[in-house]
Amino acid sequence: MHVIETAHLAMPKLGLGTWALKGADCARAVAEAIGLGYRHIDTAEMYDNEEPVGQGIRDGGVPREQVFVTTKVWWTNLGDPGAALAASLKRLRLDYVDLFLVHWPNPQIPLAPTLAAMTRLKERGFARAIGVANFPATLLEEAVATGAPVACNQVEYHVMLSQEPVLRVARTHDIAVTAYSPLGKGGLVDDPALAGIGRRHGASGAQVALAWLLEQDRVAAIPKSGRGENMRANLAALDLRLTTEDRAAIAALPKDRRFVNPSWSPAWDQAA
Ligand SMILES: NC(=O)c1ccc[n+]([C@@H]2O[C@H](COP(=O)([O-])OP(=O)(O)OC[C@H]3O[C@@H](n4cnc5c(N)ncnc54)[C@H](OP(=O)(O)O)[C@@H]3O)[C@@H](O)[C@H]2O)c1
Image (cartoon, rainbow, N blue to C red; front, side, top):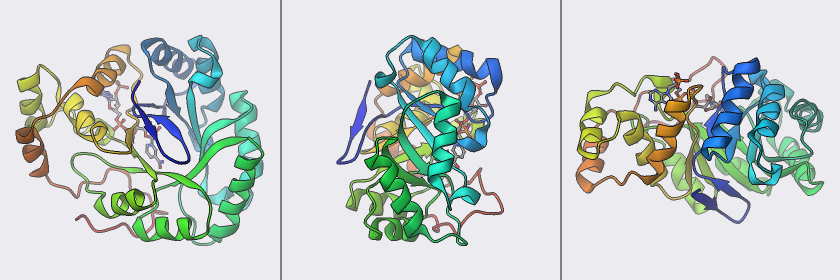
């Protein structure tokens, strides 16, 4: 498995997203993904699926330490990340997570104490690494400026959404970027331009979209799938090599399509 290595973490480039997977379906999907070779699973307290995610990890049959597990503290709970992580670990039935993220920024709760509390959780071994999600470039700079060991920013990122400002800050500070909704919540998989590129490689448009992310330095992607066939195809995207011509065609796609934009979103960076 291809792994991103930074000063603060070693994270497999391709992970399984689990949002909206629930109950037995979720446990089965996670176990199946591990059986196929996935070693990175993304969940969150808000997904209401940490119990089946934990079950799927145990059913996957590989030692715990070989699976990179991310969970997140919901933005209304940032006042007490320790309580949130303790509850997550209990549901997951794990002693630690590999990455613990602020799920969304919350302007009502000061960032520095939240990150300081998360740093203590890391020091006590409950999270191997800590980070943020949905932080635009300026907020990411603020997070780094607190002195916390910010290892990752998880943001929506795909062939139709530029994240150049975030990537610039991340590169400067050796921070990994995890691309969520890398298939635009499924909305990109039938795009004719991507399908056309895929045909040249005997691949699907979804695989092209993932290969474009996965070839980028310190960028991971966490496509969600509940289906073995798609999980397998997404894993195979790690081996798809795009050409200069492919990259030029992808560069010409619109870069301002955002699929996740809830009312509590921060002011996003303008598409570059
Ligand atoms: N931090 C955050 O705020 C945040 C926000 C959103 C998402 N996330 C994380 O990112 C993960 C992924 O994002 P997402 O779930 O929003 O969307 P996504 O991964 O972009 O798209 C998932 C959709 O694509 C389909 N799909 C997957 N692989 C496919 C393939 N090879 N060919 C065709 N269709 C395919 C899936 O259907 P099937 O299941 O039928 O395969 C599903 O409908 C989430 O599950 C979650 O873990 C984090």
